Image (cartoon, rainbow over all chains, first blue to last red):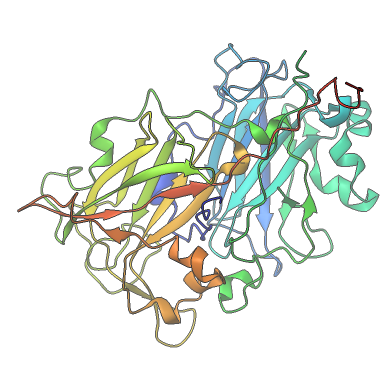
Length: 185
Length: 242
């Protein structure tokens, strides 16, 4: 019989004590020529900034390979760590400096469009929220993505980060008409 | 030949609290109000970060030695293993902890509880599990503290744990509680876990064997992450007549 898993509990409002790393938000250096900046704000159902959240991102490198022994193709060798973490500021703002991931093999011989998995932990969240960040300027790849394909048209856009120079902007709404798609993973 | 695009996922195991738990007031505007969308576990979900190897030192696991003096309170050892629900050890994974001091006060600007800060205690620790999934911290037993969720609300003493695991879908943030806490019954965060067996999995056990004479009590807390789905083998001989 399987062991009982340890249940999730909220990270609470004081997560900064234990979870901040100075270079958490910089998956690559700010001045890396390949760097992109992902930014946005997190807003709750009352329209208030979520100022005490933790955002984490996990992604493939530019070649679509993961820095993980669990990648059956073998771990990526380029030294890209693939993981970012930042806390939100007083305006609910978050910012991760990274590279744009390459396409990644998907189920059933499909190819997934460039994307990051993104989790949110905060007071009031009894378990992590998981969403994905895609790129609005990857229209052809997005159209063939098996995860995006399963979403209703009107909700797909909640996962698409908009390019503004080397920045990509994506706001995350926890509730309401414009609520971000969150996954049961 | 193995098709590397076919990766076993992780079991969606029971026991986690519902996001919408009205007794915990902060969920009201934060818990998603639309159904979650089921996500198949792809390469992105079954891989995960290996962070901390070149950054964590043995000193990071002793929360009582981070300042000039020794913190006040009851010195304790908290140890256990990180395994998956099939009992497989999760080695070399980052475990991060944070907690209130012995008086029930966090070293955090947003904590306004009228209890003393301890200049010798920050309440943050980290370590990597060893090859057998074991971790061990030395710390101070945290105090209970009041919060404003409901009238006369008090959080049971707890230590926050963050664990990576092998796969991003194994990522876990939880709280470790202490056995026999009288505050369990009125705590909506603890009781958001509805299943009794699952709640028990958040409570450490007193460990006399690991208690160090004349020095510190020990508590044992195993962390069980989700297990892997059975691998679906595609046997080319299937359907053949023998």
